[in-house]
Length: 382
Image (cartoon, rainbow, N blue to C red; front, top):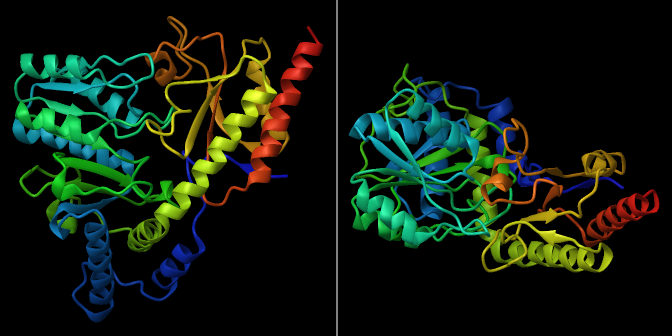
């Protein structure tokens, strides 16, 4: 059996999305910046896609800018806000995606900003009292806190963070790559200045993403060299990627409740079966809490064993694709910075299983069975 449980890394392309993209791969090949009929046809398709994305997110078309993905979008938003507004201080957390964390760290190394890290509780959630203290002591900062963590699935309260940032006149950016397409975002009624999305996280194509920049936030471009994306991002547009992104988001919103319930059921099934099958198993962060974590992600904290390094390999040779690691040990250069950030036990391994609408209950059962076999063998060899 082949089982794909690494959907937080990337999702399979939806067939409907492929069909929407295909004409722009084969027939409609004009450059959207060209003024002739071939170019105009493609330009019209891009603008229709922009309108689709904006309407689904309750934003205006002038607030949506297409990019190559979430990493570019995060970099552009962070660097451009700091440069445009001359911001000298930024606040983030130690469990952000590296697209945010490494960008912030690099800006601090360059001497452009002073960087502060908000405290997290033992489950990985933002400590709001500390966030407010940082905002009080550092006027006009840039806050970058993700909506949901890609490794442990913890969901932050964007509304509460946004309200706090508005109170202290602070620019608020959120990496929403793991939640766009899985949760509804009402951007006109949310105090957030910028968010990001990546199509391949919700059954769209790789290499296509977007950034939402609130119309009141006039920031300078990050990539120069052309007037594309209303002078916000130079370079010929990834036309078929943009078409695919919009179609994928449309399908997600159309079927969201149905898929949410189905995928949450798969996750619940795995939690219960793991608890019954493997003694000493637990879950990192709040990933087993349906109220405070992504329904698509489960981060499993495994019993301590010298053989944990072989677990992902064992799963792989049994046809199961997942991702994992352990907390960074003190002074170590490898390991999960997210698990280290929540002070997970570095001696215990971890596996992230992430689910999609294409997974089936029998795949969950098979995966738990193979995990249980691995630990039975480990015990037998002791």
